[in-house]
Image 1 (tube, rainbow, N blue to C red):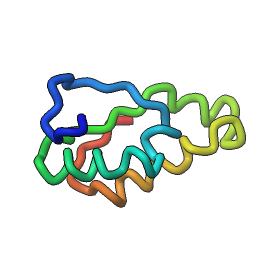
Image 2: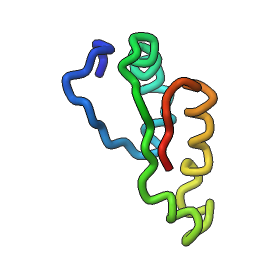
Image 3: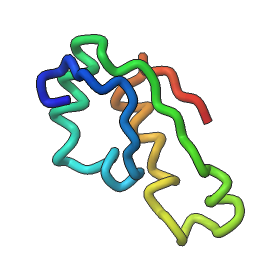
Image 4: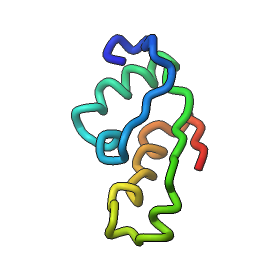
Length: 75
């Protein structure tokens, strides 16, 4: 992923990792090289079932959309 042209085409990340400052430069590079195609949110039902307090970073996933507006998102 660091190269901006990843060999692995599917990566599973937690919301905490996705929003971390450590990963942002890598995601920025991938987005600039059109290698960041979509964000798929799995287990979004957790918010409805357990509330936002259980995993507060799920509620912050909109920050990803703001930072990478051209990336398709599937919820």
